[in-house]
Image (cartoon, rainbow, N blue to C red; front, top):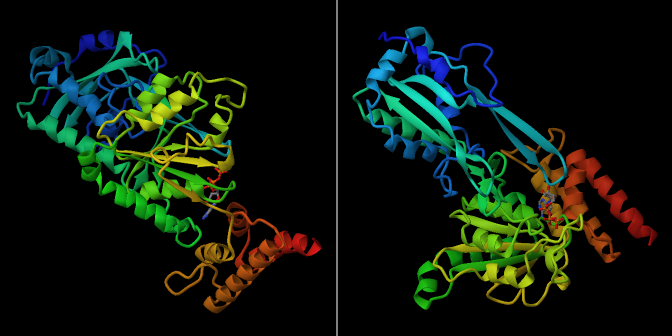
Length: 455
Ligand SMILES: Nc1ncnc2c1ncn2[C@@H]1O[C@H](COP(=O)(O)OP(=O)(O)OP(=O)(O)O)[C@@H](O)[C@H]1O
């Protein structure tokens, strides 16, 4: 196919600020360049930047950024213009690249910044299943998302092909690519103003069995959540808001957050992490967030005691957020809609919580997630060094010795508990990560029994 060159293209191309020129031409033939350009157009599953015009619905992924604009780009609309614009050599090039960055701050203080080059504002050309497509990304200069301050964007796809199916094929492929990135992964959302946005990349799901709780505790929570999910009709018929609140309380490092994340993963739910100390959070925004969480997600509010122990909300730096205790209670109750709402609260200090917060209807199930019991310690040990396909994680360790070491650990944790010593699951995990099985048991003895014996 040979068509004429886009003389106006360079002049008309939108010079996006902070859009570096690519060092060389970037091939855009999707048949030879694979789907990489397609993925760069549709993005991955990171928070889109800037958001799409219809991005108000948090369920929309990158795919939806393309959909509404197709409607405004009738096929063949600019056939003549495009025919004039095209020249064989330049169709396969795009200099309009943007840098898309993702910043992730982890709970332990570490952070990472990822970047990738994506097709930026301007014109791009690609050949998709034999049809040439013009892709035009335009930023709105006047309108912007008031919540996040980012400009809206229009992506217009135009084709000369008579085959309209090319759009549906492209969109299905884009959707499949987007979904693949999330398959088997846990998506965590955080609040941006009054809307939810995915935070960082989707994470690998943690197997539920890797969080070792006291016998029966995890099972009880899982059963309760599953029973709740099966009773939508029951709630609707009785006019009861379809919501359930859970409180997991106990010492630090006992597995509260890990269990909630693993449970979300097991049920293919997302997590919506709500920080009540967030600057700018108001009662209204909180209410909006609680009632507009993405479908199939748990709302997780950690360390809820820190937020309202004196019915005043103060962050670490002394900033007082403008949410009120009664506003928080109202948001927890939610509007009496049929929307499913599952809320998890965690705390290290249940005694500091206001009784109004944990009354039934707001918190329906409270569970203590405690320090390690002797059996838990042994199970965690076995999980770490355990037998897989007939072999232990360490070749020099026979299954018999593993059992013996596990029993020894169980006994020593029992002894430590008798001596009033607390054994944290997080601390045990730390010892197991650093040591082989034999050294780990010796280290536990040194850590817990030397002190216990001395007492
Ligand atoms: N019961 C457990 N089983 C397996 N791993 C655990 C368990 N408890 C803690 N851990 C490990 O310890 C670390 C901290 O756990 P987690 O953050 O879930 O504890 P937490 O109870 O939520 O603590 P905090 O109250 O301080 O938020 C995680 O890396 C987790 O893997």
